[in-house]
Image 1 (cartoon, rainbow, N blue to C red):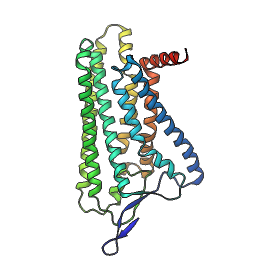
Image 2: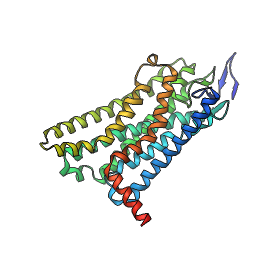
Image 3: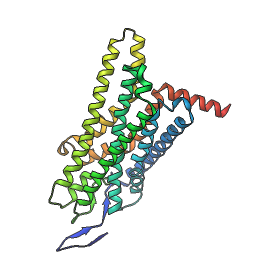
Image 4: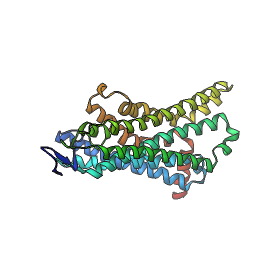
Length: 313
């Protein structure tokens, strides 16, 4: 995996992922748990995409949810299968370019998910605060434009991380203290003198987090203001119930993991605690999102009942 370099150093051409734990019994238990979680993730999110695509009533209101399900699959797939393999082998290696692909794909779909959650907050804002203008402000053309912005933002974030990774110079140990090629442990391994490769992607990711959180907060301030002006208790309940699933997803994604992994100082938590947070970010949340939206969304539950009745009738 390593080729000779100058002096007494070697140039790293591959990495060894240390994984979550070295205890053989715990590794078997984690293998079975993570494998089941990944299968549920793929099945649940694919089911959401299929249900929205075949149900004409869900095409418009659930337009962004199908993309969120697609992004959740893509966020989990580059990481989780490799993590599962890591439980079965003593030494899990990944090539230099394979590591770069993991860095780029995680940055891409993580950023797109941030944008999608912000767009969905804006969608709720329009539906509750300007219901008569909803069909105009959230037309198919506008939805497509918002999605294009989300994916472009994700691509730019991915480019910043991928380019920064290839500017890092690795000349010493090649053991990554993680279960996938996360950018922060790779920066710690590198022997690059310049700090620019580490600063640029951090600035890009931080800017996306700040912008999307700001958009979400502003949207919900307007929603809360509108709800408080409603006179009927039924109106309060109906308006807030449409936001419950989205608020749950935001809380888990931003305040449960993203802030923990990417915002708080590195010295605040140990590397093992960061790994656990990354498991939630890359493995658990992609599984939970379809569950949250299916259980808390009457339109999804109604469409599922109709399709099941149609199939078995």
